[in-house]
Length: 444
Image 1: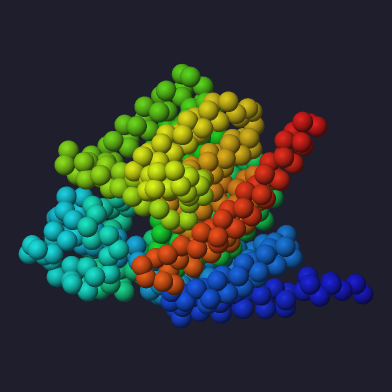
Image 2: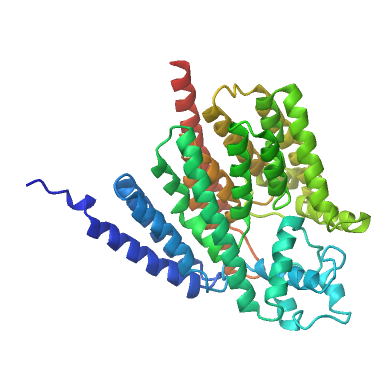
């Protein structure tokens, strides 16, 4: 009687999943952001179990691992985010909107000087990481915040759990879209586990409450509808993605090129009109100015875990003696836009798989030129990489967690050697894969 080798036996899989569950509990409920040693040890352990579970069991136990991905998310539903404090601004905006106050109009510090609803407490205000900045979250997210404020007008813990439930529902929708796309592209469905089981995705989206998961849902939905020749539905879906997180606008040149001149302009027009309609629900001239001001601040003042920008900053400081972010940030945005448009219009884009490869390169270029790259930003390229042969993004998802080293001191202080090591590893792996891909294409 033939027996499976020990490394293919179910008991090993269940052991890995139980150990992973314990690690998720510890990082979600028992770990402070400034305890970098604990953070990085738990992340490293989770990535090790993720790698082993995928490598050994993805083709034989797909349903088990799919269920584990859901279970890990549900395990984190009742945790209070401990690696990010963005959720408190979500709750703040939602309680303003639920009480008829436009969250784009006032700074939190201004609201504290006015008569305010019961839920906008001093305690909640003190947990905000940007009390002197106007909100930057687009209208689709504001609708989620508003609903949260209506359902939980005073309970912060209840509001956090409610938002997490919404994110998990969208994540489940993303998993289904991935299966449909993989089936259409004739790619094995177990590759979806590269995203579903990725510890960065689980911890940053459900655990730390970030809405990249909602954006990914709308973006993949848009791509699927486009490939099914339903360009009107695709355009509306893309507009919803833009109204969630502005990043999907980067893919408009690529979609335009794929659809062709005539249909491409119709697509852009419908996407633009739908986006404007969504923004018009909460915007007037003043609130639009406040949003643009916040975006400008993000580009010209914020810097974290960057790659190319840190080289520019170092050269600028060396030659001028001061930080050049005020002009370097906008210049890098313009350069990345040029490269993205150039890549989108020059790409072969002959097959559906080519489309996803170019989409992955588009978002990679954007983040390499950005002044700020938080770990959860990598969830978008991770989702796109599932439909390609490129795996450098999965290395990036691990090295991105190294950025938490900055939080072990106050004020935040990055270790630039650690940042350089992480990006060197990612870019080295990416270059190797790109050379192998071009060589394979050349040989047909």
